[in-house]
Amino acid sequence: MTDDPDLRAALAPMRAEVVASWERSAAAGVEVEREDVPIALDSADLRGQREAHPLSRVFPLLDDVLGREVTACGAVMALADAEGNLLWVCGSSDTLRQAERIGFVEGSNWDERLAGTNAPGIVLATGREATVTREEHFRSSVRPWSCAATPIHDPGTSQLLGVLDVTGGDEVVVPQTMAMVRAAARLAEAELARHLPRPDVPPAASGLQVVLELLGRNEALVNVADGRSRLGQFRLSRRHSEIVALLAAAPRGLSGDELAVLLYEEDGGSSTLRAELNRLRGLLGEELLASRPYRLTAPVTGDWLAVGAQLAAGDLRAAMRGYGGPVLPRSTAPGVVRLRDELEQSLRHALLRSGAPDLMSAWTRSGWGRDDYEMWSAQQAVVPASSPIRALVDGQIARLDRELG
Image 1 (cartoon, one colour):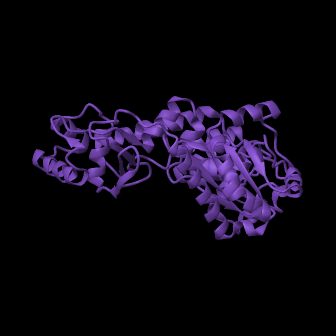
Image 2 (cartoon, rainbow, N blue to C red):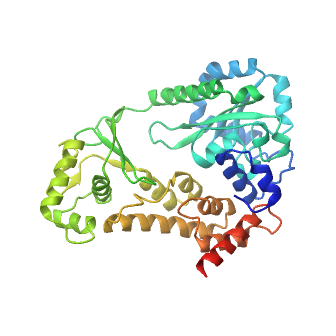
Image 3 (cartoon, helix red, strand yellow):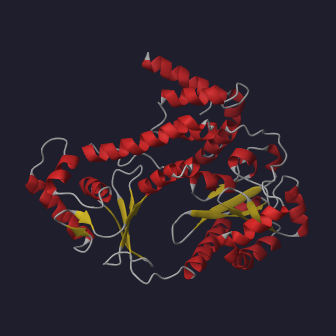
C-alpha cells in the first residue's frame, strides 16, 4: 500500500484489484482531474480499424443480444480492441451525449495508462473480467459512472481480441449485469469459432493438443483437446509437473539419463524415474507419452511459452499480462530452475530497459518482485517527484535499505 497519506485515504475502502489499478494509473502519470481521454483513432482510422478487425464479424450479434437491452436501461455498450481503443459505443442519444463528456466515445482509448482506472482498462491489464463502481474510478470526472467488462479471445489462438463493456449507473454493477456481459462475450467467441477453417490434416497423428499452465503454479494444470473441443483437464503432482515441463521444453525428446540429470538435484535411481514415467503415462494416455526417447507426441502450448513468444516479438505489455508468476515456483529440479530463471530474467531485463513505470509497478507489487531493489530503483528514476506513487516507491526503497543493511 502507498505511503502517501492522501492516496492511502482514497484507496482505503477499495478492493485489491482496484487499488492495484490506481497504483498503475498513478505510475503512468494519469491526472485525477483530467476530464476526458485522448482520441486515438480519427474517423478514417476508426473506419479502417473496424473493417479489418475480427470483432466486426460479431458486433451485430453483440448489439442484438446485449446492446439493445443495455440501451433500454439507460446505459451504453462498448466494444474495444486489444489496445483499448473503443471501436463501437452504443446507447440512446441522450446517454451517448452524457458519455461524451468524459471522453467515452468511439475512437478514444481507455487503457489505464491514459484513462485511469476503469473496467475495460483493468481487463486489458489483467486479462480478467472486472467491475468498477463510481468512486473506484481514478479520474473524478468518471465517478458518476459504473462499468462491467470482460475479455473476448480468439478461439483459435486464445489471444486477446478485445473487451466487451457495459457502462452506466449503479445498476451496472449487480451480478446479473456481469453475467449478461460474460454470456454475450462467450456467444461471440462461439460465433468466431464457427468460422474457423477446419484443417485437412490434424495437428498430430493422434489429433490431440496439450495446453500446460505452469506460471505461478506449484502443480501443472493440463488441458487436452482434439482441436475442436476440450477433452479433459487435470492437475499433476509436483514431480509429474516437472517431467511434463522438461519434456515440453525438449520437443525432440530426452533419454532417461538426460531427463534424470534435469530432474534430480542428486543422482536419482533410474527405477524411480521409470516408475514416475509409467504413472504419468497412465494419466496422460499411451498416445501422448512416448519412450526412446521420452517425448510428448502432441503439439504443446503453454502460458510460459506464450510469454516468451511475446517478449521475442517485443510486446512487453502482453508478456506482463500473461505472466502469472515464476514457472513451478517451488520446484528445485535443475532443468525447471533453468527454465524459470531464463524466463524471469528475460522479462525482468526487458522491464528494466522499458522505462515504463506502470509495468515496473506491476512487477514490484507482485510476490516475486516485492523485494527487487534494482526494479524499485529503476521505477524511482522514471516516476516524477510530484506523482502520488512516488511516496510508495521511496518508502519501499527505504524498507529494503533497512532490511539489507
